[in-house]
Image (tube, rainbow, N blue to C red; front, side, top):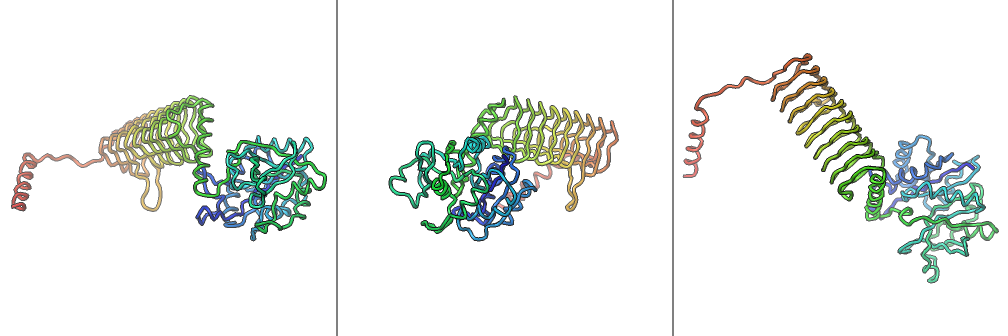
Length: 449
């Protein structure tokens, strides 16, 4: 049976105290909306419809940046979850199959949980609701069940004292045949405390028609919704905790797990060692056997096997490190390919460059890549030796096996095997330092007297 998704992402999120649409606030460097979509993509949905409202243009741009095939519709007037789902009807015209309603501010629902809901549908349930046992039910809607059947969903503001004592809560996620869902929504009214069309009225209507309703449950953490900055911080903590465990379970060593932070797409190989206080931005792959030393920051880069990075290193977007490369303390690499076995051990900037295999980059080396308007490229050949405090003024090429003298400013290409010296001739003035210091001390004495 084909599956479609409707992702509700129209809310303003006033409690976030932000001009940014709530679903675009980020966890692990990705918008909440993208987390919600990624969790459901394992179902291989035939269609996905996002219902946008507040900040709709920005929400649509983020959705299309993730997947051009997503359909975005607008809910200009927010009249409740039922009304929002109805806005997706036209986009699902001609679709025959099951629809799952998800929420753009609920980022952690797993594909396995959604698969369990579809399995309940295949077992004969007409409507399936995702529930969870809440430690503190608070303002959650309550699921009132009879045996294994769902009788109704009661919003907290409309619940009796007895119903408020129920701990089985509604996540808001619902699954049903598309035609049935829209037919039932046409019958939903607004006679409630909020004056809204509740999606949660569907199970009661279905039961009145003699249809079967079921509840599938999941851990409470999966249903975590983000409504405030505090919720956002809790979601970040939950993501990081789960990812650290996953990374260690698949064969990496984290010597101080609580101090390491991953992005939503970080890929870590087996036998990787990650020391304390390492941060991964988006787009990082670290292959097996690499070591990331303490206080390093990586983003948009690829680290091959047996590399050693840091401590205090920064790899920026476009850094491509081949096998066995060493990038040491206080080194920054950006938009550069560093080939096998090359070393950039300390206090250097290598940007917009190509570093050949086995090259050695001395301390304080700078590739001067930017002229104020354009970026220019530096090429360093295999086995080259760049002396300490060398400034390579791009565009420039240092040939294979070539050398630069320490303190040189290199403005012309250096042939293979050549030595480049680009510094002023040293001049020693005998006795001048002593005479100068005597004059300075005398001047200071006159000033203080």
